[in-house]
Length: 454
Image (cartoon, rainbow, N blue to C red; front, top):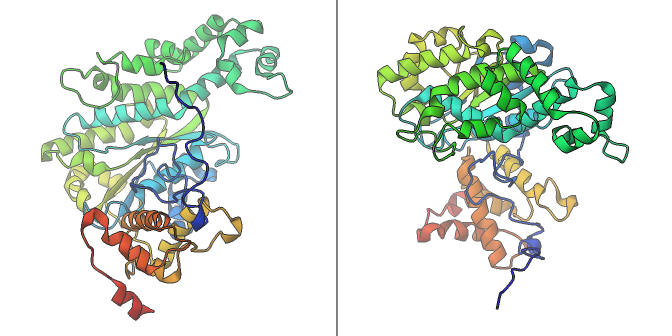
């Protein structure tokens, strides 16, 4: 007998409902993943007020609509601490905040509908041990393929190639509205008297005239750029970035990103963009000293010095995240490559934004932002419920500056335990019990300090 699967909802009533929550508000693993659909992981939940000053400096450096052309070419986002304590402070979350702000409509809202811009996000979740600049560029190309900007740009270029009458007919969704997705549907174009092959040929010629290499222009025009990237690998994969004896994609990645894609995006109306380079320590930690100098010079050539379309048009502003310990190994190479004269690699640099650990009050705001996103009763927004006051204090472990990553991990465990125990609130006893159960190993009991503070 063939047993068919059941299609339907995975659950009907949340076990977190007694706590006044629709679902678990905190991530099981407090690491930001920009490609996740989960708002707990992708930066969709973000408390702005604890980093208001840092956001304002970031905006002043990089996102001034009235002086966009003179924005910083190179900037840094820092956290205090070493390789361990400097992680999980919120650098990636801040980058995702700006990435979502800009990429949701390609900068039209951000820049008062005057022009478009985009964010390209590069990260290195594991250490890289060779061909550093090429792998950085390939990571940027992969993000571009995932972001949807190629489809949006292709649709615009098709629209601009049509007559006004053709454009109106193609965009008409039949209910009085306009649907830009119809521009990418060849049968719809054909049904409305538009020959896709004719307009694609015109777009390809236009891209070539704007500096895009011929074969790249053809694949971009046909919506096949990702397939083109995959064709460089025998297994047709883009990741992992480095595979021995299968590195053709790396041979072309710098030219593709900093020449061809820049020229393509400019042709599609983008005034510029941002290249966010996260976890820079995973890129540079294994570099020998000589390799760091080579990388710094190659980075300068791609990012700030003449050599590519990117620098010719000052297209990408590059933002690197780091912490003080990681920067020490790169600082000398930065100086030798002349980059220190442009933007000193130091937290006190005018081009730097440094994220401190949150205060206790700011930490509460981070927790409340997550709780508010999943509340059943909107009237409770802004409160610490279902936590009690002593429960929040226990969660913060009596620290003046709680570490965000550890705090969110503890919050997840506390809510989970309260739900499993059928509780309607989360007090200090529940929090301490949840934390002490981690891995079956007890953690220090901070209750005495908390009680003293109360």
